[in-house]
Length: 214
Image 1 (spheres, helix red, strand yellow):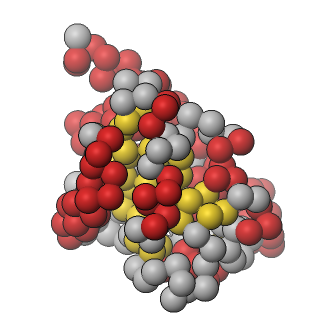
Image 2 (image 1 turned 30 degrees about the horizontal axis):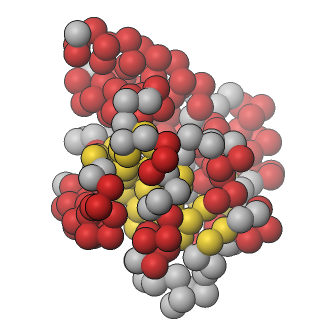
């Protein structure tokens, strides 16, 4: 939770509102349409495509942006999917590869990048669009990671753990609510504010997932 001192600091320095909406069963339908679209463009690499993040957990409030995990056979496929997805209207954030070299990250918007005057390939921080105007058009975040890697497992484990542990889901819900009253520099800063909770619960989730799968 955010303490009083942090609260006052946040009010003074942050400026982008993160919209948290009650769980919407239509999010599953949106994921289904996006999965079909992804398979149309990168099905040749035989990916595993999962709905992850808060929109995948029934009853959990979330930003109305669908998180999708593309599981690839190996690291050699990470760069193979870049050009097909760019051509299909997904924006590729190469800038994040420096911090997460095991992942390729894409954003899908409600409209084509051309209609929103957005670049399709973001290589450096100065090219990242203004979050105040760009985020409200986001439809999905796509994370491509090799199947079976530790990072792939933690996403799947955390989703399944929340679905099976209502007390943890409720605690996460309260944290989101407490943070949603603030304005943020961008989505990354909002995610950092949740980081302590997520890292703690992710480790429990991975341990639980391994035991359940063994």
